[in-house]
Length: 191
Image 1 (spheres, rainbow, N blue to C red):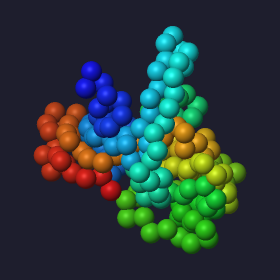
Image 2: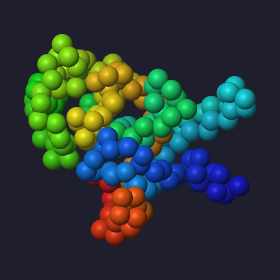
Image 3: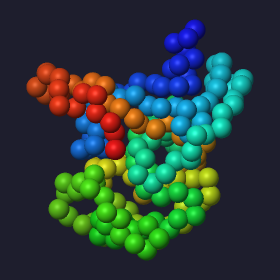
């Protein structure tokens, strides 16, 4: 019972399945997510019908720069992990792969671009997006691997109610290609 309470309300382990957050998070990374910081949930459902839902008060709201686990808006049965780049009321724009929030270019040492091409807005919203005002009670989420991330540029702002928790600590990392642990990544805080 204690395990269910801890997993449901305090901390939960997640595994990274895709490269959308490289280099911050790699395929094969295992991490702990703090569910209390944004307000833990009690969500009891049976056969797809929600019986009880309650969210406890948050310690603080999500902030730009936080790496967050959330329910994917187009399929809430799937969890995604991305970085919050803007919150409700802020204006977001991407111009030639550079992120602007409130008209100012953001310095993002964690963001990578592996594709040298810059796609025009008519082709894709990947490299040229907005300006877009994030609605209240929503977050604008982007993967750190900006050329390979399905994020708010494509599916819109994330309702805060879908947030599950803040990524806090890598506790294990497995390199599937080499079939070896990545020892330099163990017990590393996520920033």
